[in-house]
Length: 230
Image (tube, rainbow, N blue to C red; front, side, top):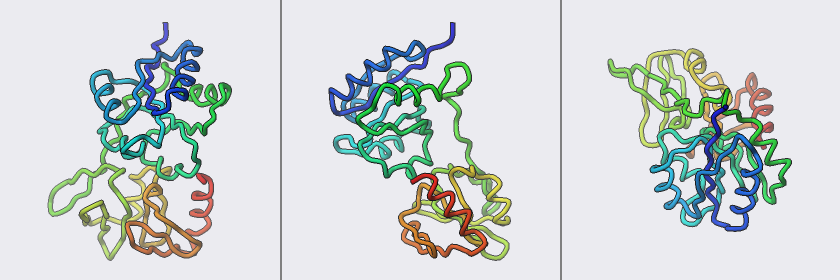
């Protein structure tokens, strides 16, 4: 017998949570482990009862859904439930299976959960850190921490939330270590994290308050990628 996928619903609207619970009950390979109505409750419940998949409402009391996910070292797979459609870019840094826009129909719910299988999905697949050699040490960096990477001379400078790591390597060799779904090269000197883009036009991208130019060689590829997730 195939292992069932343990699910947890995080939803502050009781009727919406009840609907999801009803949908889950109709799918033989899903098993509802619990329901939380706010982030604090969910944090306690998931700590005591780890699951394979969470259905996450992005607009929770006191904290947004993506901020809640950042509190996990290794979050489970996530199906987002939301009344809004503009959050796809932010989801790049997480293990987002699908986005369900409310009101959620049962066929659309099935389409999302059918992307999963208890037999072929490794729910505990940890995102491996990338190592940068800096000051004679190999420094591990989680891809989700990276805002952008700049090449200057023989070095790349990796910009994180509150520090910069410098490493002697080429920008191309750095790009090859990164997930192409999460990062894009926009200039001969810059790679940016898709999830960290604050705004953009056809000439520049704003990341971490810095305006980064889009090179002509890379513009078409960037535009195709950015528009595909909007």
